[in-house]
Image (tube, rainbow, N blue to C red; front, side, top):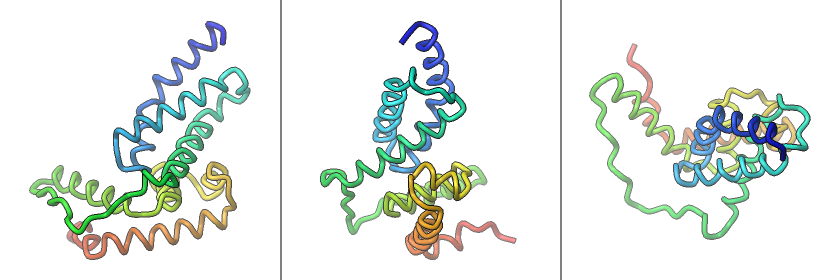
Length: 172
């Protein structure tokens, strides 16, 4: 890569690293793994930087790389989650900020229990704000698959959260 390409990549990296890391965290539920996944995505992008003509598609390329890495990693036997009968204590929420933190914590805990592909769809659709077509393109599947994975993922999330959903709704 020439000097100009290196500078462009450095600027893109600086501007997008936090967003990519956050997306990776929402998909895997672990900040350390999210760092690794974001790094994997940026290394892949750096390798192909000089070949990418459409700079407007960079976010989609990085997002797709993160999603693929999360799904691929979840298939490795040593990465499969092991569940225990003991759950950690939930944080006590006493203020509006505390309630927001508790709500986020509960949601992320529930999201961790959703299978990786369904979790990826839920993150892309509802937390990244992508439509069905964009999510399908990133996941390299049909729009129907995105819709069915969304429905199954929401069903799994609802089953995991159970009665907690009622506690998360603001009082009217």
